[in-house]
Amino acid sequence: AHLFFDAGDIGMRGRGGHGHLDTLSFELWAHGAPLIVDSGTYAYTFDPKARKQFQSVRAHNTIIVDGREPAEFVTLWGLRADQTRPRVLLWEPGESPSLEAEYHCGPSIVHRRRVLLTREPFRLEVTDKVYGNGTHDVELFLHFHPDVAVSLKNDRTALAITNTHAYSIQISQPGLSLDQSFYSPSYGIKVPNSSLRLSTHSPLPLTLTTSIHGTPRPQK
Image 1 (spheres, rainbow, N blue to C red):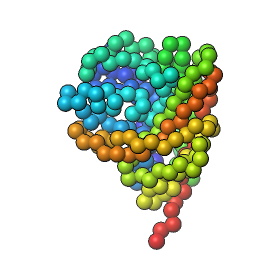
Image 2 (image 1 turned 180 degrees about the vertical axis):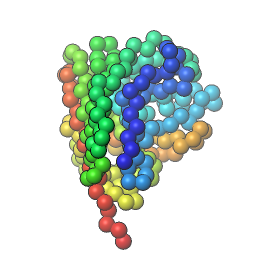
Image 3 (image 1 turned 90 degrees about the horizontal axis):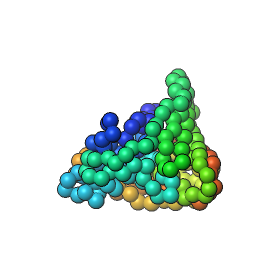
Image 4 (image 1 turned 45 degrees about the vertical axis):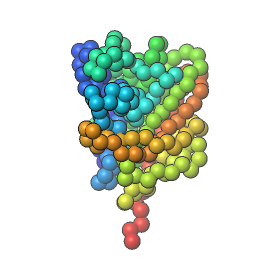
């Protein structure tokens, strides 16, 4: 199992460059195949609208609050003021590695995420805490590789099936839905894939827990 976690700045030294709005997003490779994926790049100059879509928070495996991007790209490469200030709070390597980081995802709103990965038996637990005042719309996204078959069991539970394993996905809050999105394996190419979206309207602070358990499928 391999988990890639982004806790860095959006671009570099205040410039957007090739950066995406993917702070605290992650990718997950498990049991010989990609499971949860970054949506990719797809386009630059030939389709500016698609460029913005693939850059957006919604194209990544993280949280957006009130539908507001944490920073604004003003051209294909330019970034207006980046006030996100990400920082790593905890890193514990080992057999069950854990990492915690946070960033400012909106005015007076902080998103803190902790991931804990257990390889055997396979389990990933993601704890999201959104700090702030008042009541807000919060959305969480998970994007799956096109080879993964995803189905919704109820408004808290989904199932993801690969050739070798079945993964149960459970979220602590109701409001889960199954959507179609797009995945770009390389520049200029996009293919349909499945994504999960959790939508909730809740007072802050808010805690969301996502648990992913994997078990082998019976082999014929």
